[in-house]
Image 1 (cartoon, rainbow, N blue to C red):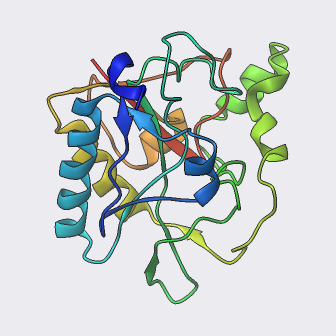
Image 2 (image 1 turned 180 degrees about the vertical axis):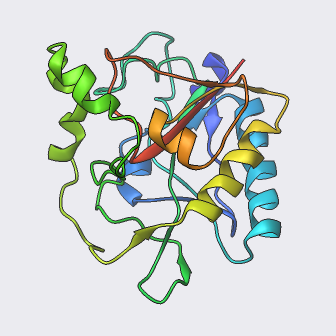
Length: 205
């Protein structure tokens, strides 16, 4: 009832848009501005056209009230404009799945491969100890055999980037290079944040 007063609404869950865990909803971490809600639906439909049967699975969004009220442990999820989206994974046979390796959706990283830039080490050497802290926030690895799908995740990112309302998208530099992504909306989040090779963060303009 109070969310509209603060310009927010609950994320509309459909056959194409789902929360990774019911705890997100139970803890009221699933509120966004109406324009972000509309974008999520468009992104999900576009993703389903590219990858039939695959859903947009969201992680943390925002609380239902008050700008600048912190959504711990996130630095910026405090105005209804931000949301984290799960990467897309496949099983050992190569079939895409609407699942995530960890119970929380965070903390199981797609590490750099040989020859890729290792930004994680750079940040840790600067004393930014929190950079890979989400590895302690998995709350359990439940699907250890899942593998990162480059093609499906890139399709998801392209759908996010094509939305006029999208202002910024954060993903780890080595994944940006690996997926051959070139768009001015893709930014580096900085060492003061946490690493983004376990999820995608995007936000409104």
